[in-house]
Image 1: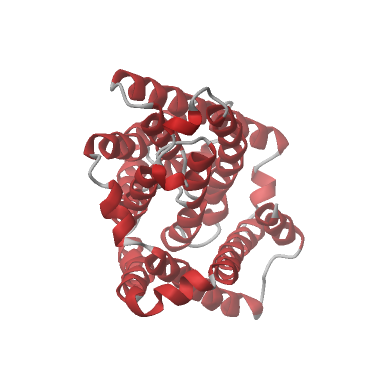
Image 2: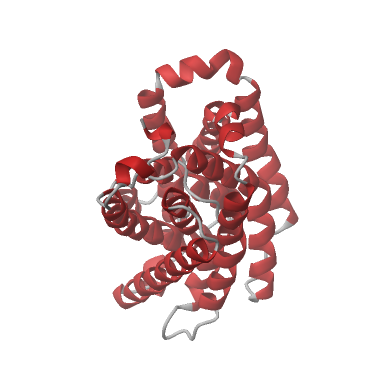
Length: 319
């Protein structure tokens, strides 16, 4: 709700004039802070503990960085009366994002799934996504005729995302306990930075004529496209899990990690890769999909958790 509140605020009170340069600096600092905290929270022990299930992790990564981008590219090629051309780059970018971490782990725990494997899979997805998401987005955007991503954007990824991430992770032995102890306060700072990026993005988009280009019907079409994308990936990951004869806890990990996309990583990445008024249009599909996936997966997680024998199936890490 706060994220959409930023969209409404920017629609009526966009940042202009002398405020704009100050906001730009604050956004860059906020983006660096988000990835610094990502790095500081990354537990090598958790990754190692779950990384032995290579077949499960290969399926999760294939869904996140192969299946989903292909489906997103196909969706971007739909006629304009189904998906407006101005939103197609955002749908492609959505398809290239890594999986979520916090919500994947939370929903897996509710569903009595393999939490240790989910921690490993989601963490690996986000770590790989720092490198792979910009590359995939550039390739798929170029293929769709949307122009791709300039070299400066890839260089900015290294400076604004990767460098803070590595710094946070290397400092983990010294700051890890502090970060864990103040997790609640730091999560507010983390989320506040994301809200700031959203406000800045939609300020530029609104001053660039966003709402003169998009109407309520366009938003409704976007909701439909995102819903169909999610349904397809959920169905295909479930089919893949059963074809591979995964246990139910591992099936839950594949379905949840393989179908979800990270707003926490997507907003800062988009802020680096898509400067100017194009950023708002790119972020809109990511924000819409994020809300849909939370509502749908919450229902699925509850149903998994109520299955007969769920207590016995649950990973020991859930306790």
